Image 1 (cartoon, rainbow, N blue to C red):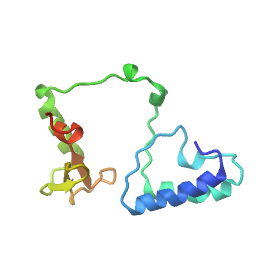
Image 2: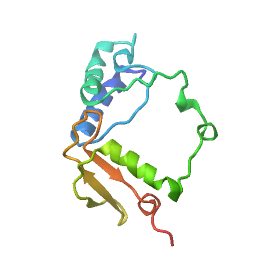
Image 3: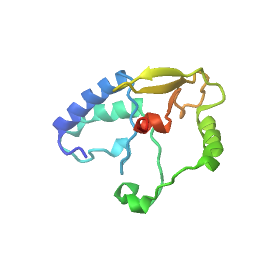
Image 4: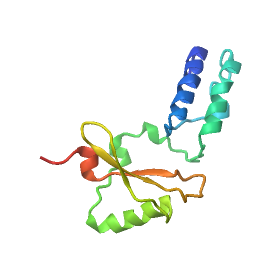
Length: 145
């Protein structure tokens, strides 16, 4: 929550730098970008940050009366996936990324771990990123010892 115009100025510079370095932002809010810091002191200084968000982010209205951010993990539920659902997940993953995918590339991240990256140059849907990451259990948690 932004309550100070100085924070808004810092956020604009920070997010512009993050976006210019390819960072993808996934965030939630109870307000649409145009309604952020509404009624705040010197809001006109905050407007460039709103413009940055609208320019660089795709806003999705969830349209739910439930604020999932306030739910405890016990209320949200966890789903452990077994082998019987792996085909279903592969199908959904393929549906999200599209049919045409380039060959995977291994990218070293930290502590000797690598991620398998796929660059989907054929993605035509604006809501679909052309870069996706698929992690194995070993990649998420490290190899079992």
